[in-house]
Amino acid sequence: MSLRESYPKPKKKIMFLLTQDLNSPSGLGRYFPLAKNLVRLGHSVRIIALHSDFKNIESRHQVKNGVEIKYVSQMHVRKLGSETIYFNAIELLWISLKATWNLFFEAIRHPADILIIAKPHPMNSIAAILARVFTKSKLFLDCDDYEAASNRFNKNWQKNIIGYFEDNVPRIADQITTNTYFIQERMINLGIQQNRIHYLPNGVEKERFIVPDRDERKKLISELDLKDKKVIAYIGSVNLINHPINILIDAIKIVLKKLPVVRLMIVGGGKDIELLQNLVIESNLEEEVLFLGRVAPEKVAKYYDLANITVDPVYDNDVARGRCPLKMFESWAMGKPFVTSDVGDRRKLAGIPPAAILTKPGDSNDLAKKIIDLFIDKKQEINLKKRGNLRVQQYYWSNIVQNSFLLILDD
Image (cartoon, rainbow, N blue to C red):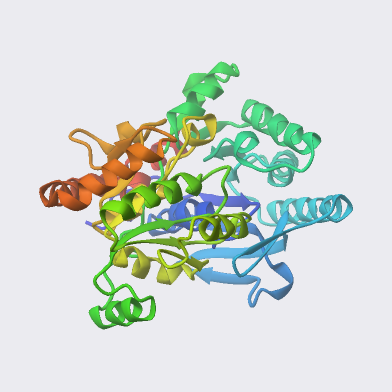
């Protein structure tokens, strides 16, 4: 029996309103997989989004895997290669107004049964709330981060605006999904009715994370000079507020004293690349730390494949508690041991026995020790791979949508 046949409920028109593009972590790792799996089940799905380089996008209107995707304006920052460019206050105001109008226009032009605000940002929230007046759509809100804590703001008023929307848009939404229990609890503390809040963790697309061709792997190892090396990988945004990679670099200094064949591979772009590169130079680690910048989404699996271990360093703070790390599920899907810290949902996600190594948050010494132990203890490595392979099954997006999200749609 196909998925479509197993779901006889009336089909719905669903529209996602995004303030980012589908190459961003949430766009690529959460919203597009949700949309694709809803289409597989017979629903009609549109994604109306902003783009990080709107002027130079090749195709503003496209259909992928049955999902209609339309980019309508520039997002609040511009991304070129591994660089993130910020607009001044006047530019940002104009971009925000234009983006809000364009999102609103598309929402009333194609009325949907359900409008999904993908993160409670001002532009998509205002557009969706106004559109509901004209279309009578149900309003869903998805919160996959604690934005007021995890973003870098030039001015306090910017943080206050984001905080206002995070605190108040949930009061208006018909249903709310959160990817961490921390955000769920935060909603309850705001006075939101508990029956409107649903836990919807992140997941992974099985078809995106498959072992690449062996010849490709050999070629990449040669290009990066990684033959006979033990590779630790950080794969994700280079943004120290969200991802304190400096902890990992400090840990590598310790690891190298015991295991000089280790190399750290940092794959991703963001605002703090130059700062981290300077830290590596100051630490005399230019030969041991590789900065590869942003890579195309279809190539990410190739870099996971090169890794012996993947790491998600975190502090014990609200930023980490508000995140459900995509890296965990992607590492499991690629059969790689995953190391992070015991913060937020990470212990619960790892399961019993744990399919991840949990270190003391913010502690580079403990992180280094756990990495060294993992390299030395082959039995531990094998067990982690087996547990990860079992654990990831329930986090494939097809299963999450089928087993959880459909129930929320019909609530």
